[in-house]
Length: 427
Image (cartoon, rainbow, N blue to C red; front, side, top):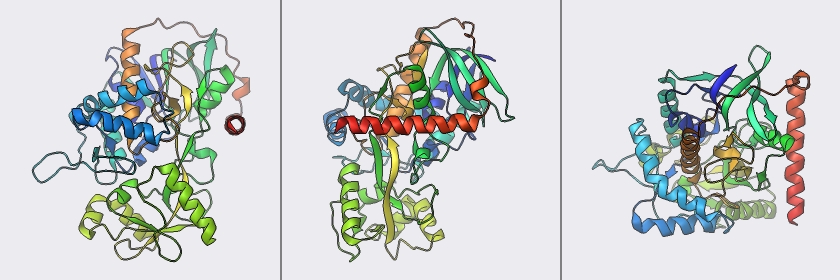
């Protein structure tokens, strides 16, 4: 196979990158599952945007404070200053956000935000954005999407990426030549028992980086979402109870139905408080009360949450629901610069698998969609400004990939061991 740009992943960052590349480039997007089974489709809360000139400094401070001031400040500035441009693009692609009766965009607020600056579409903002991006990509003759096609490895020589090794749905393994390769492989939830992520997202890009000496950054910075619907079933993807419900007034109670925490704390601090309360109470969950939100607003703003709770025996308009923290988001990843370039030539990384320093130690709510889109566009613009010739692939021995399941098991262990090693090195 041969393509100009290979994009590994069909989430919002991979799709937006494709849309910002020239139409005369042949672009191949591969995805490990089907094109809609990625975490971008699951994002409930919304997408941040700088409201006005006066909002830059508060937005900047909110992001740094949530990230424990370990953020790369230049990246944060780029994200905020690019936010309105991204929203204009999304609106042009047909993305619909909730609006006020007068037709103006409606903004909500989430935990650790000092202002209402979050645009949303009901409680399925990620699905609304990503589905519209997918529609626009499918309209382009120069883009091919290959579903159920997995990235096994990169074809590398002298720290230059010349393409990749792919596993196709029929089981055959093949190499692909590319001018540039973009890693948009998503998060690492499949490495954990309890996670809001899809199970097939197992940190493939991290394993590849470890095998080839590509720089990684902060891969032990793993965000736990404080409120997911509690289930005693193992290996079930945890259903996220959006931060937005707490932004709109939902409360958290202990086993005696008493409030025990300020609900709008940053996620890591709130998670600590919930886990401490569970330990104190000897329970596997705490209670979340959505009844402070007017019923009409609850049903209109959060219909999926209401429906999910009903399917599992709870009516959140009349009773509290059980919630528990679960692995949710990955702040670290393949280290990239402000153009989303990795330490390997001709290789970029965008979205959750990349670490450009925006999030620091802890992601501010609803910054993920914005950060992914901003830096995906920057990657596309940089590749466009620096075209390369497609060069012959170096010799690749395909025998190590004969058993993809064994290869993936090795990768999982490698990544978890490295996360553990880096955690211990901070102590």
